[in-house]
Length: 381
Image 1 (tube, rainbow, N blue to C red):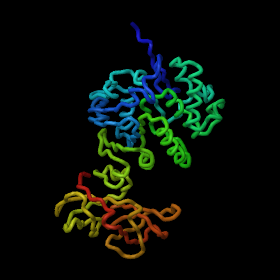
Image 2: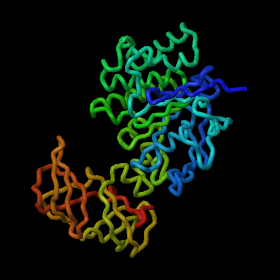
Image 3: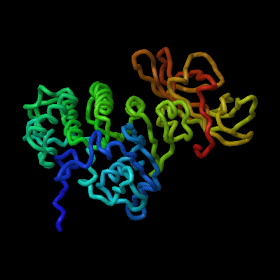
Image 4: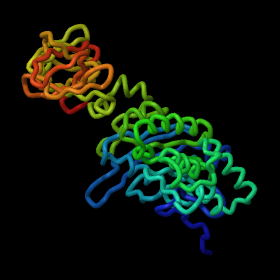
């Protein structure tokens, strides 16, 4: 017998909509189920985009996949959605294995980087498109559309066309369309990247508010650490198709376990050096043509080659001489302080903050409390 459930997604559609009714929704067994990724692999010929991803996501959790372009985060999202088949591993929603199901039978909502709205349809028709495909009775569909539009604060905009709306409003419509089908999981692929800075800040709070209101699990892909820190319950930092570290925003910001993670948490300066001495948890390192003291959070040994990492806001530049000297290369004003780059004696470039403007080519002293320096092994571990 031919399966009548067909995929109702195109370049203009923002959700995976099975004919015959939604696969889940708030209060349904699937919406209360754990999502488990076990050994996910995705190969493109000899290139491995995903190399054994293991991750368990609790019902109702907001998880951000964070990492640079090419790290595998969007590939992981597409595999969860069913847009890409796995090369290896499995995906379970509760006790049900779903990686072998087509996208329409997974019942997930998806919000894309582009708004992907039907330009010739009103906002109400865009939001209700999935319900029409599911053949939801008209009275129920109208009530659910009203509910979704109210949730995204667009109830009075229902008769407008997408072209009559701002970018932020269009993204809200896309979110409403994804959640109106009451999916157990909402997948978001860098949904704020096309918005200006002010709208991005506003939409962060809105997306988190909507997540809390609907109770669905949310998986959010971003390369922006501020987005991940401000919205997620848990952040998964990816690099080269692997998970580097998973933890709460506070864990990753304060205690990154790898240099790649530290860099995404704002530790932009890397200074290579060699351990000179250790005493009472403090380590002295010859680095950048100077002697630097840091707090060793992990075991290191005398003579070991290490990498020191410092956030720009913690690396203060002054006109006074300090143990670390540098030459200003760039300087810019950012409101309450100046930020710039400087070259150290060994040629290493570093990022700094200053309370005063310095001139390009000026010699400056750079200092930071030892507790604000992270010490990693040469390989970044």
